[in-house]
Amino acid sequence: QWLPQSNLDLLLPPEDVGVFFCYKKVPTGTGTGSGGGGENSSSTFGSMVSVLKKAMAQALVSYYAFAGEFVHNTGGEPVLLCNNHGVDFFEASADVELRDINLYNPDETIQGKLLPHMNEGVLSVQATELKCGGIVVACTFDHRVADAYSANMFLVSWAEIAQSKPLVSLLPSFQRSLLNPRCPAGYYDPSLDDMYVPISALPPPKDPQPAATSNDPLISRIYYVNADQLNCLRSLASCNGRKRTKLEAFSASLWKMVATIATGEHMNNNICRIGIVVDGRRRLSEGDSEKAKIMAAYFGNVLSIPFSEKRSGELKE
Image (cartoon, rainbow, N blue to C red; front, side, top):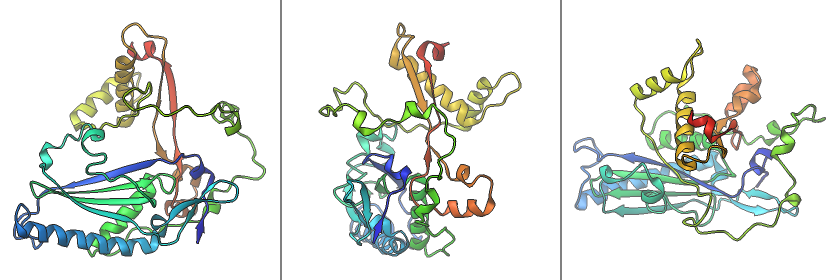
């Protein structure tokens, strides 16, 4: 079976994204073993992995797209071949305790160690037993197949099956016609002409540079912000009777911080941009409750990226 890519899927380049879940050591007497070292720990970890594998096989019946692989059609566009290719599932152990993992810098401590690389297919999973008896379950997805919303649908279904819970999660819909372009196209904002250009108009790609020497490195960070700090940021960002949301307040603070560090004291004319990836399903439902239900089950990419730009000097004020 062939699963075509929607126009929103085709906007994304081949890019892998990851998600990981950390679990503390299971206490003794809970029915799943004691964890820790020794033979009992291995059997406990092995039994947990066995449950995860069995549940994944069942979840992939509905989410069969994750067991496929990308090929190209005669026009050179990627299409998903749903051929039951399967999912790579790795079992590993790490001589580190959960509390010692530097979650702030996942590029250094998680990527390629606890989070698997994608060798083939569109989904790769790794379960890692830690020195303390904890477990990290990590997944790497091909972003062209699913956005975070769709990936979460799969993860919830997988978890429900693994825990033998009643299946209350949505069954995925692969109805690509939901995202067919309007015909005729109708009105669109002229600013879109500045955002998209034909591939033929682009210069030839440069040779890739090592990450250490790249002028535009992509880095990942994980932040822990408590409620008091968020409320304080929100209070500072709200003025003239207009109350900002927590997301707006935190994003503004982060934007200002990055602009200050990245441009230095004397580079106030540099352009600094911010974009926030959000789910576009609600917007496409246009207030129609029936359409909202259909879009809520849609599996694929329905991303929207509101963005803005300012000169770094304005952000530092």
